[in-house]
Structures are given as structure tokens and as C-alpha cells.
Length: 274
Image (tube, rainbow, N blue to C red; front, side, top):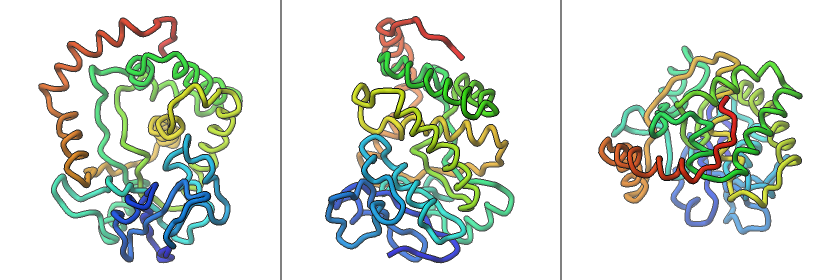
């Protein structure tokens, strides 16, 4: 059942196993995404009210975010994942309502700590080079064209973020709903138009979710929002192991010295760097 209080953190879950794992109390509320034509066991689901649940294959947690903006009654909303939350410190407890209220007195948003891409690749290179896949170049270039046509005031921020080597995790945030509605009013028309101009069958699932991990930064940059970065907390041995390995300096160096150059050689180099 939805928490209709002042703050609700929606815990994105995509199947029966994950929603049973999701934190569920007065602050944290599981939200079953991609719920269209599925048994949700009575949990709150993204196929009710105004929704885009049927787009979940490509939009991932964004179908949950859309539902939150259109249907939530809370003044402050957050998006966490059933295995990814925001915490006070690396080994600390999850954020509680007092933490959230305190941080949002001085900041516009709470987000996971920003980190550097491998080999200092720009965000543009990180997605296109490491995927060695021409359609990703087309998706980014098409996005830039849409922004230039529809919301040109965002173009400088888009170019800045594409050149940056800093990125964030999984579209996770906590913020005032009025502010997040402004983000929804910008990002969803952009994504819907992108969907009209590219062939989603050329891409792996979750494309829009992956892209918005970067486009979220464009919106933050354009509005010059003040963000509070906190530690992401991962649930489960396998996820924690993979994140530990990803952050290990020796493993990162090995990847940068041996793997990335190989991927770069495979990459078709006729792309423009923003």
C-alpha cells in the first residue's frame, strides 16, 4: 500500500522475487514496475492510474518514475531499487525521514555519489566506445538534435555533460515532488520523441533507463541544482562483490590498460566528440 505521508521512497522492483526483497515500511514503499498483465500480489504497481507500464522493457525504472510523478500524493518522493538504496555512510543505515528532511533544507536533491568513468572516458565515449555499437552513437546524436529543436536552452548543459567523465547510478534520487514533476515534464517528451526517431529493436533492453542516467545530469546542470551526494548501499553478496571489484584500483587499471584499448580499436571512429 502506498504511503501518502509527506515523504515516500518508492523501491523499484520488477518481479515477484524482487518485490518480496524490497524494503517496506512507513517510509519505503515497494513499487512493481512493468506490471502490465502480471500478478503483483497486491503490491503497488505502475499499471494503475496514468501510466506507461507497457514501455518497461525499454524504460526500466522510468515507468515507475512516471507513475510516481503522475499518481503519488507525497510532497517528497524518492526512487530507490530493491538492491540499491541511499545511506548515511558506506556501512551506515539507510536514510530515514529525519535525514531526508535535513538534507533537503540546504539542497534541491539527494543523489548517489558521483563517480568517474573508467579511463576518464567522457560520458559520450563511455557509452559509445565501450558498447562498440553504432546505434548508441545514433541515439545520442538524435537526442542532441531533439534538444536543439525542442528545448535549445538545454543544449549547453547537454554538451557539457557529454564531455564530462562523471556519472551517477541507476536514476536514483530523493527530492520534492514539484521539482521532480519539472524533470518529468522535460525528460518524457524528449524520450517519447527519441522513441519515434530510432528503432528500439536495434538496442538492448533498458535503453531509455541507461540514457537517462546521463540525461538526469543534463537537467541538474541546466537548472544549476544543489545536490547532496550520499553513499549508495547495495544489497546482496553478488552485487556488493561486483561493485567492490569495479572500484578496485588494480582491477580498474587492468581494464584501462588492456580492455579499453581493445574496445577502442573495434569502435568505428567516425563519430563527433561533443
